[in-house]
Length: 391
Image (tube, rainbow, N blue to C red; front, side):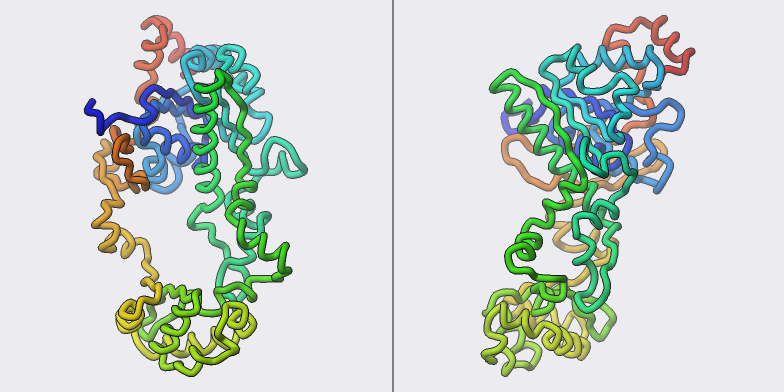
C-alpha cells in the first residue's frame, strides 16, 4: 500500500458484541480508520437493527465481518475467548451485568488477554442510581437537560429523538476513549476498562449551557441567545431559514436587511445581554419580518451582507445540497439484497491515513465459517458448532 494510503488502525482488531446503534457506530468509526472489526450477532435473527428500518443496519456496519454466536452456550463462549486472545479491543453495549452472565465480561476476557481494552456502553453507566434502568436516546437526553432546551424558545420542550444525539455522542466518546487506550497500551503495556454512559455524554453536550446556568442562573431556554438573533424563522413560502446573528456586527446587518435599522442602532439591543433581556420582543419582530418574503430572497440578502444563515433542509434536500455533492458526503455501495445502499462517509479528511470504505455491511453470519477456520477450528468442529446452533 502506498505511503499516502496506509490505514491508521490496520493492526487493530475489534470484537463488537454490542447489539445497538451506539456500539455499531463506534466500531464503524474504528473500521473506517482501518481496524478489523468482527461484529458478533445472534444466530438466526442477528442484530435488532436488521429487522427495523430498511437499511438501518447497513448504515452503521460497513467495513465489518459478521460472526454468529449464541453466547448462552459454552461452545460459543469458548469461540469468543479464543478470538479475544488475538483482539485488541472488545466493545459491548448491554445493560450492566449481562455480559458477565454470558462469560464475556472484562474480568473473564482479560484473563485470556491481559492487555485487552474493554469498552462497555450503557445508558446510565456501570454504577449510580439508574444503573439497571432500561432506556433509549430521548430518556438520556431528558435526564441531562438537553430536551428542556429543544424546540421553539417561545414554546414547550420538543423531542429531538430523530438525530439520536445521545447514541451518537456516546459512540464518538467511546471511539476517542478507545483510541486513547490503544495509545496508553502501546506506551505502558496496559489494558483497561472503559465505562461509557450515554447519559454522561449527553451531559457533555450541555457543556456551555450547563455552565451558563450554574454560573449565571439562567432558568430556561427563554433566556438563551436563540431569543435574540439566533433561531429558525419561517418565510412566506413555508420554508424555514436558520439565522445566527450572535455578534454585534451581525445583529446590525440583520436589522438593516429586515428594514429595522433603528433596532440595530438602539442602545438597549447593542450587546448580547441587552438582546437577551428583550428576547421576546426581538423574536416576535423577527418572526413578522421574515414572513414578508420567501427564503430565497432572505438568503440572498443575508448572504450578501455576511450574516450567518442557511436554508433548513429536509433529508432529501440535505442529500442533494451542493455542499454535500461537492464534499462527497454520501457514498454508495452495492448490497446483494438491498441494491445500491447509501451511507455517510467518515467526516474527517486525512491526508496520510485516510478513512476508507472497503466493504459493504455484512450479511448475517456471512464470515462465520471463515473466521472459525482462521482461528483454528477444523471443518468437523465447525459442523458441530452449527449442529448445536452455537453459531
